[in-house]
Image (cartoon, rainbow, N blue to C red; front, side, top):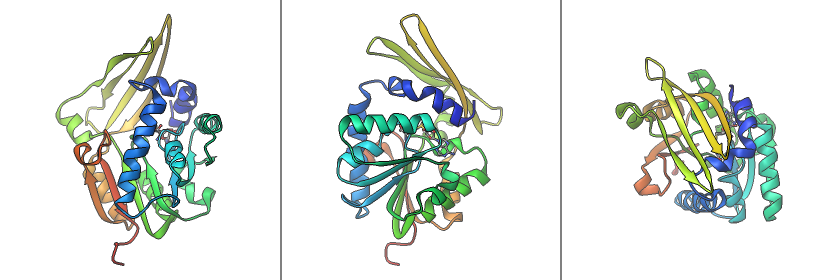
Length: 251
Ligand SMILES: C[S@@+](CC[C@H](N)C(=O)[O-])C[C@H]1O[C@@H](n2cnc3c(N)ncnc32)[C@H](O)[C@@H]1O
């Protein structure tokens, strides 16, 4: 499946792939990302664009914490679900469907921070797609703005020959992932499954196994500066996080 079809199909189930209560995990992620942004002087009520917001796992708690948040995502169904989750909690947020490669044309605004968390950039399978996304994200930043993203630690996953996410049981259901690597370890076919009672939901899509150095190089190539990687032990986020400035802090 292409990412739009994959996440449209997964939107109503998305909370079920977490090993715990989705909203509690989301609130914790909002706290951790707030702390990362604060280190770059971005605190409420500054503005944040989450350019791969999905159902709102990061965008909604950040808006609840007082940031002025716009969330965009390729999947219209995910955006619709994010809208519902926001309305149910009385969270003020702007949400639009948009491909990150052209997000600047849709939001038409500059933000203090642009974020893309939980392994979204690896959906961009080619260098050209990744470059288009980073150029568009950069155009959405104020001159002193900060970009922050998290991806899986593909360097370690290739080294350790990891083939999926172990099944976990939560709230009466089992979820997990099975991965098939390409011969050159550059892409992975990921099959996500959720088993609930006698029903099994099984969906597959392709990720690029985006190495840290590749993302660093791509950020540098489109003009980002001061690129830094934070390991989970430092940031508190469960994946490596990269931060980058549109211009250097002293500029
Ligand atoms: C692993 S999910 C993470 C979503 C959200 N950040 C979260 O943690 O719930 C990856 C997201 O990237 C989005 N995505 C994939 N390709 C995209 C693109 N070209 N433009 C915008 N969003 C995209 C998907 O629709 C999906 O919602």
